Image 1: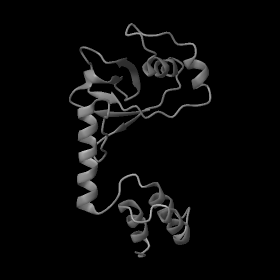
Image 2: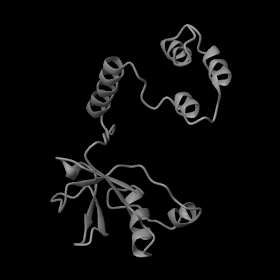
Image 3: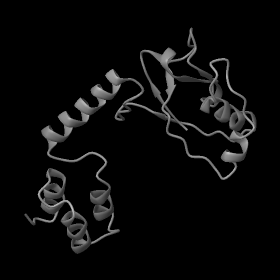
Image 4: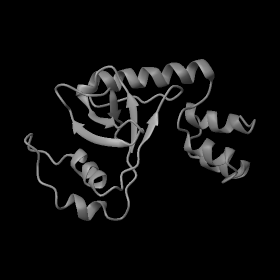
Length: 158
């Protein structure tokens, strides 16, 4: 599980930590948060998660809460957390306004740097998982689009 420090933690699941930095608790949308560490919504679970989730009961809000699943793992001593600190950007998209803010942020960075964010084809190519020819083949189905042109430009082919 990943956490990110925010100014408005009452909008999120909030994690608290003990003196050693180990996770102590998670509370969903607390009225009075005890920390500013928001749970980002990016989780990696083992094969037991669906079975555990099937045992959960709806919250007072009438919803199944992912926080309840996370708390189950915490109670079992099987919840591990990474704090995303300075140098990371986590963008919430839980409301129309926050989705707009995130899209503008990504758009600004991509335009300024000339790089794409989360371009899986580029990541695979840079990691050596695919070669130039395979990258160009993937770009072929996107020919004429900005994204396809970007992929072609990575290998110097326009």
